Amino acid sequence: MDDSWRYPNGAKAISLPDYLNDLNAMHEAEKVLINGKEQVYFEDLHGVAGNLTFYCATAAQRAEAFLRTLNLWKP
Image 1 (cartoon, one colour):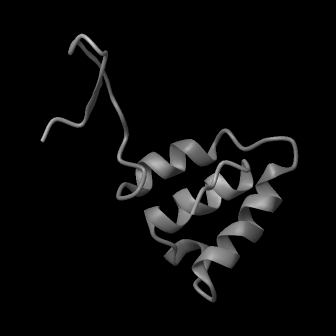
Image 2 (cartoon, rainbow, N blue to C red; image 1 turned 45 degrees about the vertical axis):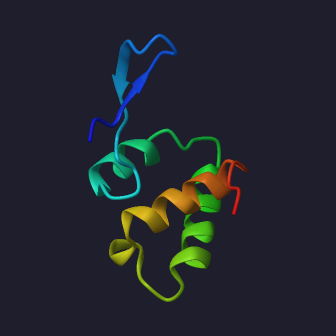
Image 3 (cartoon, rainbow, N blue to C red; image 1 turned 90 degrees about the vertical axis):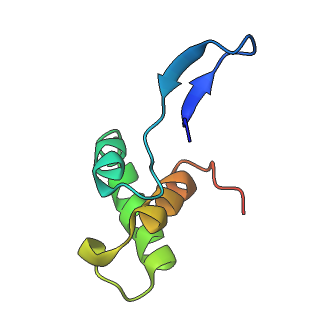
């Protein structure tokens, strides 16, 4: 399966990171959290991952917490 984003004319534009399955991709995304959003992210991650430690959270849990932190989460 080709996971690249395509323009309406079918031309390949970019390959999107697999944020839901790739912890490395989520690590790169987490780097953009600034201006106090880091603490909000950790709180959101704790809410999503429950009692799991930060280091045990899955990529999908991190992605959900990331979107919640930025007020972009839609269940």
